[in-house]
Image (cartoon, rainbow, N blue to C red; front, top):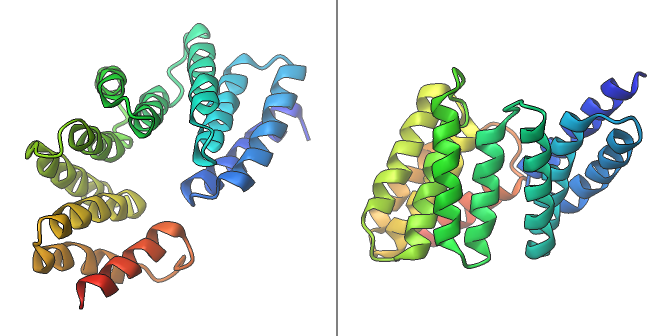
Length: 219
């Protein structure tokens, strides 16, 4: 197989594991992709591989190094003049900055992501950007009522796009928000139909979390 095709396949496997929240498995594919892309001088794919590598590291709790690698990857992609998934990569970086405790930096990065998305004809990343804004707003100020609106917009955008995974993530955020406010009936009303719409993948972390939340809310 040609090195470019091999690297693309490795990155595809990596992304599947990242979306399933399996960072250890993703890390192995990301390492292979970084090595291959560096060896055969593929700067665009190398940038993407570094973003995935950093994302996997962050998922394993190595936030500082993960964020550093993601920044290197994003810079590498930008240096090629391409915007290959840039809005989404900035979104992931923003989310991890929030997890590190720097929601303000996360929101600044997210503003860049929205700006990048606004210049693109593809809007498939929109639900994730909206959901992340809700997360960061809430992290910065738990009393900020606009977080609910961002989660609702994310849920609506995901439904419009038929993006079931993004719909589930937005529903989970809203459910946790409502449950934290003691609005259990509303929380169940949001999450139950989304969870019921899935017919497979019940071992994935998001669906496991959804099932656990619904069981908790039923008591």
